[in-house]
Image (cartoon, rainbow, N blue to C red):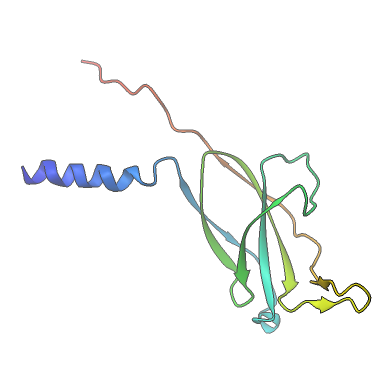
Length: 125
């Protein structure tokens, strides 16, 4: 009975994350320039033919300027990620009053391909 309960508990725990794969993105940035005055923005797209723009790629998360890694849980499929750095304090346009954030050009993109899980598992005698 204890073994059955343990198996049931393990199956329930695994069910919450079925299909997700954990990845870690890591980037180079000069340690002397890492500060809370900047943040890194992780961008995502599933189509490599779409050139980077803030209208065609989605921000996955913003990361503190004090770290150079982020862990993500992603679904199966093809994913492209890239990174930008931007100042956390914007500059105000004196004419329009609009706040503008200075942001770097995008980094190189990386490809992550997570295969889909198998289906129709059977047991044969």
